[in-house]
Picture 1 (tube, rainbow over the protein chains, first blue to last red):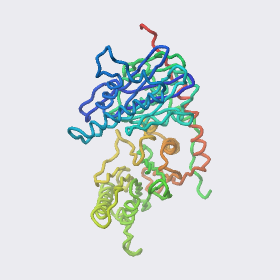
Picture 2 (picture 1 turned 90 degrees about the vertical axis):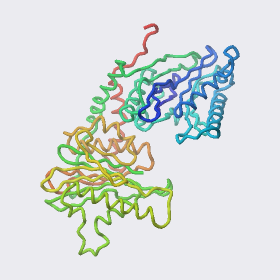
Picture 3 (picture 1 turned 90 degrees about the horizontal axis):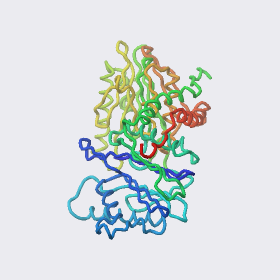
Picture 4 (picture 1 turned 45 degrees about the vertical axis):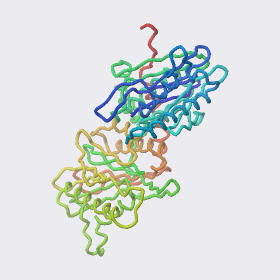
Length: 248
Length: 248
């Protein structure tokens, strides 16, 4: 399993992904699920993936044109004229990969599917964010749906729904996401730290603040520890319930 | 879908269930999913169910011995000598019902399974709480797992994990559960108000405070409304995140 969130803010785009991959519960590894392409001053594109690791890695490799010699490589996503076209190219690449594995060779019980979040900006257009389904179709984030979650999304959703605010600063978005990831972590063993993040600042056309936050990170530890108390205080702040009197 | 929670507190047992039943998204009804049996001064047993409504209703009917004439009925759960035996009787009844539907007559794509929470107290023993799986086996709540959720449990779980406290008052437990149910409600259309609750006070051996809380309930409305603000305040109360400086 996996947990990734992509968010549209007034200030730009925020991405966070976990890094746990498992084939069964006894085969757990750490893999990067976030890929960033940059043509400084012209475009920045961030891709996150949930699902079959072989599929998502093959998609990234094909997009990077790693089948060609290094000197001939121009990643396809760096050549597409628009973010819509980028999403379409990625979706088509994934569909090809899945079809290939689905039709040929040995069969597997576990599905080859993957779900992707891709967002970024190309000079001349605003930042855009898409979610791509395993079937190859995709949807775009808008005012009504300003963020996408993929993977194990349920545990971490309520806090996002309640606390998301398009006007929030990147720092607050990272805090919110860490709380959402922490809730997920506590409930599902197949989502695990460290977490990769990337904050893309609108119109910068450069990779923004990014990094990796691990379990040993002091800030994450304090968020994880303090959040329980903060939630209890929040509950206490609500009006008290009283049982209706009999006969009333 | 459904959402039910059963909780062990120092003061007794708390139960809450939603009432939405759906066969497809266009066929939504309200059904009671909570059944309480009482032999005043001797025992009180509360049962909640998630899953196939026909199955769970058949289980309750069989437990009530509704196949007999009213004068001959002695609900089986009122005759069992211990709560463990009550759980076993209910589990066996459910297994019978599922097997019957599974082997005979027309087949259906949707499973006949159901998951149950049953808790209560019989004079001479402490209150006990069980979760019964569709397969007919069951587990008991203990110190490490002091509450059970059935149905659509993921959205409402993080707040329970964080804020549950065995020493809490019934009123606070209801408040906590309403927040948990509200989070679920906001995310899954197939969980719906009104919510039924029952607070069984340990050693009372009588039905405790119980009732139904609907969307129009003023207290529920204020919890639902204020919780968003309380969560935002809770987030604000956490230390601010700052991006690591380059080169550090």
